[in-house]
Length: 315
Image (cartoon, rainbow, N blue to C red):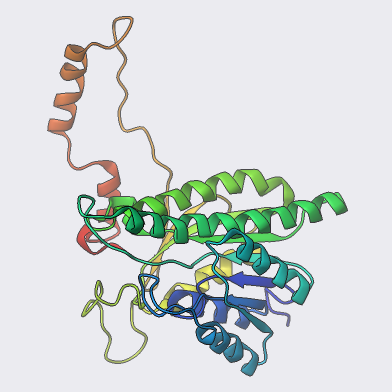
């Protein structure tokens, strides 16, 4: 029996550790050849010297298990290096079919304490990094589709965060970047659908190098699989990358610990019309002030609470 991703080629960014590693291994287990990308800096804030070690180790792990893999140690936030990453997949495996964007860093501060560099660096790695690889992968698929006059096979799985859903007080840069990734994904989904490409975004919760302090002592398991292990997230990524998910496009899914939740797009909670040519201050005060005084927390927060999340520990 053939594997669902047999004959497909994938890129996974930030795949040297944590979630990215688990996702790369899962795609390989399902039959895909994998380009394992990781810049290899040891600090979760992106500090330290770049190293080929993490990417090479995961690629070797895939090869040792009988799969096909090659390492790429470039910085996806660099436009040219992201292009080289896509080109490596195409030249090594013949084409690119799957792109999983996972690379990221953290530089947490309250908004009143955050420096310009702390803002720029997180936006650069998360949001620009997602855009760079998506841009070159999308161009590859569009060119292939135009050459054949038919849709191609393309899958994008992006990584957002629950921090974007309900905010995260000490992570204005991270929450903003993750919200931007959702917008990038839905726009990409609309733009590429006619070429046969889907784009979806996940909000994973997992115990990794980036979240070790956030989840310390939370959900630990003395035996069996840790409820917050990245291996709980990887199967959803493998599924979204597969032919079975061809009808899933532009969707946001929260995933962790054996749970997948489909998040709806924002809906209008209330609507008010002016009785005049334009709203006046007094009319808005009459309509909106009592509306918010009488309502429970916003629908966004309520939805997050339904999932059993704690706002102070979103990641």
